[in-house]
Amino acid sequence: MDDNGTMDLTSTGQASHRMSIVEFRQYTLHPGTRETLIELFEREFVTGQQAVGITVGGRFRDLDDPDRFVWLRAFPDMEHRRRALEAFYTGPVWLEHRDTANATMIDSDDVLLLRGPGFTPEPGTSEVVATVCHPTDAADFDAYAARHLGPGHALHRTEHAENDFPRLPVRTGEDVRIWFGQAEPTPWPTRRLRLEPVKP
Image 1 (tube, one colour):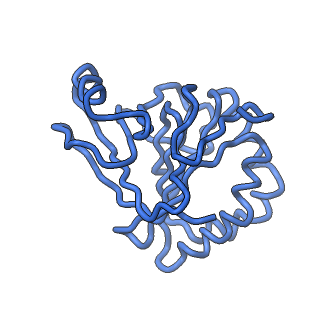
Image 2 (cartoon, rainbow, N blue to C red):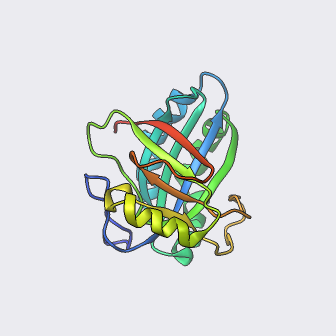
Image 3 (cartoon, one colour):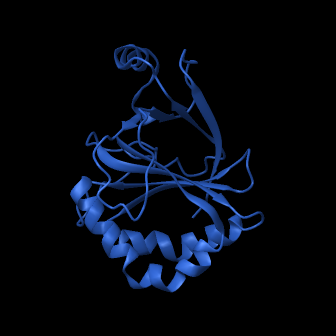
């Protein structure tokens, strides 16, 4: 944990055993604007969010969709999340750059609220596979995870707490599991994302 109470992610994509509140955010962008958003994000929004106690995790280009940007951020708990988001979205960094950022976006509401360790890929990683799974039976999934998923997969599951920062919507009414890296196929509906890490 750092001085702001946020979680330090290791260079191996793993984190401390402590679970955090994690947002898995998928943005659909106007054609040709992804690099504009990434440049702005890396220059302004990483440090701007860290300054208010947000842990910014992996940022990715979707290799199968040139107009999609995927990223994660983490908070120690829901109360920290609400306070940190309020501070960032009313603060000077967002207010100065929001028009430029929003001009790249068609949809920024595809957000899953999760509980997990967060995820940052190892330096030099060229591709990460993220699996979004909708298990029909939690106990059966836990048995699958025990057999096939280790700490390096950074398993996350839906956080069902009410979104107390409604200015930023999250998807509700579903129960998902997300992990990173290759694993045995599951019998449940899944979506696999091929992601290229943004290099800081």
